[in-house]
Length: 109
Image (cartoon, rainbow, N blue to C red; front, top):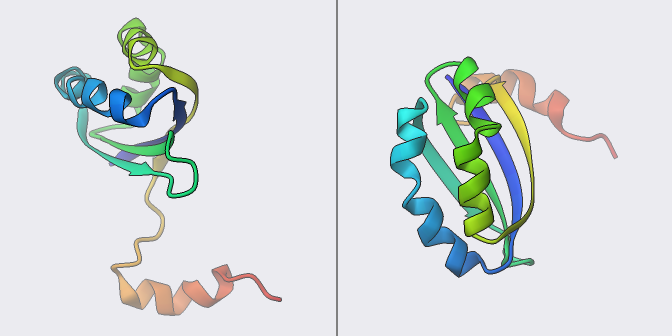
């Protein structure tokens, strides 16, 4: 399963969110199988979205689509950047992997 990570700044997060929620059917039709939205605690109009995809090609096609550009403009997105896709390489729910690899991932100060 592939994932897209989208960072964005909206003019007004609370106006943006219902518009994006209404876009879910279009995301599903493009191959999305779920999305998570995280609102910044310090900058309330900033958000990070993690979109889950069935395959790696779907986000490449969708992220440049005119439908997405139009809904982002309508929703008041001021700026956005995305990582077209990524594959899970570590999931903290797998404790045995974290015990094996986690210590090497922490910074050495």
